[in-house]
Image 1: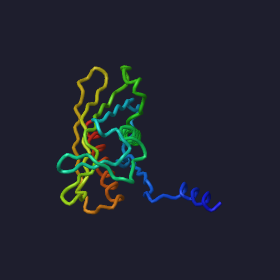
Image 2: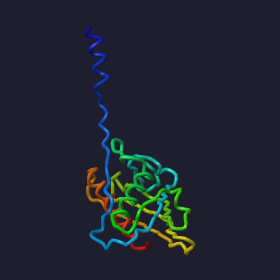
Image 3: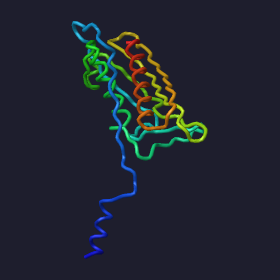
Image 4: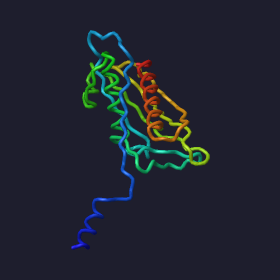
Length: 184
């Protein structure tokens, strides 16, 4: 009986650290004038290879892609960034988000982004020095010339606690979103 009880205890206990899931908030730029008729926009976010994960990634000076062992985003990066952008654009009152399949309709616009960087930089001594978020894409309505959107945000990090690193990602996403809003 003691052997069975001891064996079962091993199923509920672990020496592995618990996995923490981290959340980012959409950017809300304060009170803005609400448009009479919001612009319908579909959002498409894709990522370069390596970024389609829910892991919080690191990149070392010698280009080694790693991850924080016990930290995850609430979803994979493309879905996370898409959701943040959708909710941020809606919060302005100037945009209504439609499905990507509706983007081909003439009354709808399309915001296409490729996320090229979304990781914490690891410097000398394996210490986090900052976070980088970079994207490139375009915004197009009807047959108008597309507006090129490029954002390259770096936020320094002076503390290696995960909450500080995630706060830096939040500031980077806020800045990138503001840059996108300024261009569209």
